[in-house]
Image 1: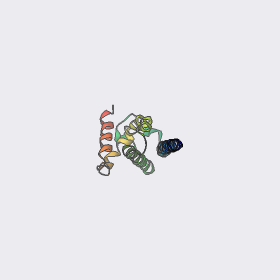
Image 2: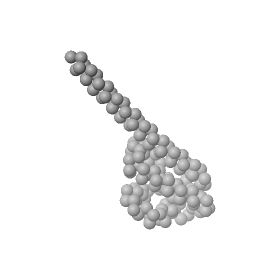
Image 3: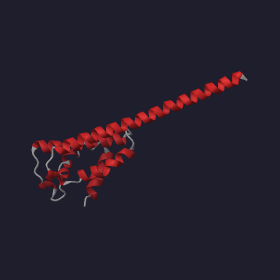
Length: 144
């Protein structure tokens, strides 16, 4: 009888221990995913501050915006940061629910004329990433 009680207690302790490890890993993965996302968001926000206000106006055609070399580089870095962030989402490094928080803002940003004039040069670089290419095409098509 005592043997059964000890086995039951041992089994219960193993189950509680496994549950605690699972919860800790799950919480850590969510926290890590959120941290990755926030760091990329901060990076994109810092780069956006380097651009002139005219880059964020939705008026005009894509070729109408004159950007300095530094501003153009900031646009390229923003696009590449969004690419990296998107690939991290596709490969499950952070939950899709986190992505949905900023996706509309990212899509609006990429649909602005200052950003639409740049992706043509990136198409060759990102051709091996079909998920990203399909998403960028969707943004171009849905642009008003």
